Image (cartoon, rainbow over all chains, first blue to last red; front, side):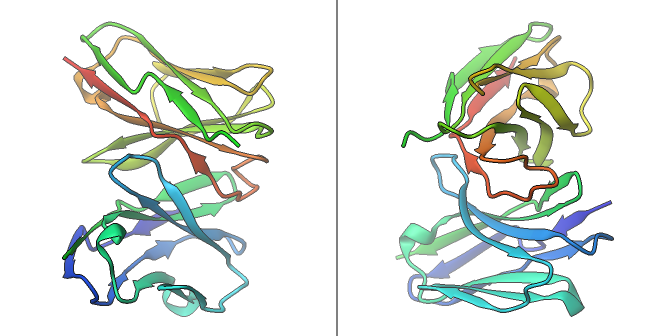
Length: 112
Length: 116
């Protein structure tokens, strides 16, 4: 069975701090996809990134960066110079075969 | 392009009743999947519909059912409501089959169901 663990339930930082959200996954599939979604207070999850199991290149998009390491089954997400608008719940998700699993989510609060 | 639309936004029901939630996907998207979000269990996959057929189902009792129409709009039904069914129900659409296709999802804002 697939599993996604986001051990950090809540994180609170002050604006301009860097913050890393951890995601550890378990799967027996050799081909799988990892995702990050952001859920602002409005409730609608917003897609941030998708990474397949064969692509371990790190990715940077503006203030966001992702570190994928198959050796540790981790797909961590870093926000550089956080802003108040980054406050949301962030979900890591794993898709493989016929299963889609989400982590429990990490609630990030960025204080001014 | 209009996003995923879910109606109603809020619902209050009592135990034993049944409820129907509606989801209109992004135009051209053929896959609609449903999720239950609760503080205790997080986001859990309910089922996926593609071309009017249920393609995959999560681990939920038979009281949870759904259907998809020829225009890809989908409805989810919960019968004999229980207190534990109180949750945010999210619908998501994607152009292709989700399970096995690994598409990114476009979510609606959800329907907040409260069972009293």
